[in-house]
Picture 1 (cartoon, one colour):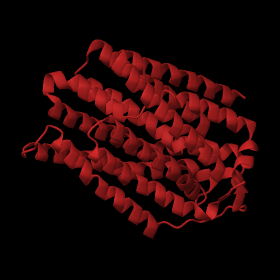
Picture 2: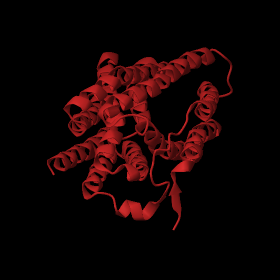
Picture 3: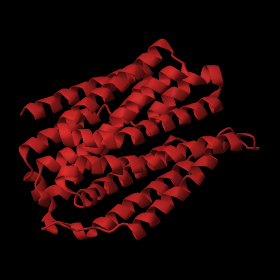
Picture 4: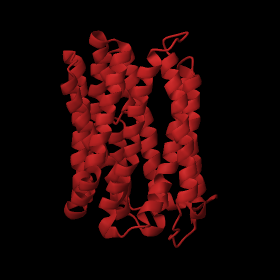
Length: 340
């Protein structure tokens, strides 16, 4: 049976960061949906690979009493790039729109190619600036036997996260929803620019509340605050379904949906990892984060595929309504974990 060596964590995180620009290259080259799907899958795989191990590095560098605020600060700093990136993308899209292109997708492809640059810089920054504390007392932990030995309560927690995750669609679909709703009144390029700015707004909300959410969780309990975040996630899906039902093209109302989305993502990304740390032993922390990352990665792919397929074949209302139903079910399952 293969061993899972924590000494290789930094290398694996670097590979995870490196797969993101590779995915962007594939998307920039795409002429149809197969290469787009492959690009997204490569990026998702990279995120799933780097996230759990990076979280293990972070949590071993702080005390248990400050985990919430540490992860809140980490997520806020991480999201600053997600604010600046779309802003720059919107500006470049507007600039490129005035140039001569052979087809309508030329400006979008140009922006995608430029997005490869910060992805490559992220790999270089992690390589040169980050050190792995390697506090684990068991550097040759057996992976599958360790999964079987994880606490039953943590397994129930993973089940709840998985159920919620089946409804937790990628927010690329939220951007597409705003673009679709605004296109009739604005045109496709202007609608895409506004949708990009709405996503920037969502990220600004996440930056602003991530650290306060962590502080609140340290004081009130991480699991309780995470449940509240899941409720906001279900509300985001419900409101998006209603926006399509009523054909809303009001920017202020759409900004309200993106605001709630920013709140719930801030809670989810900061606290799913800290709740995990509360439920497992230190020597199984990296394995537990790997399990959490796997559940999140697989279910987000399933969710986005379901919402996208139902949107295309039936209606966006039903797609987002189904997502909301799964999110509600996951929230109820998490409530049972807390009571247990």
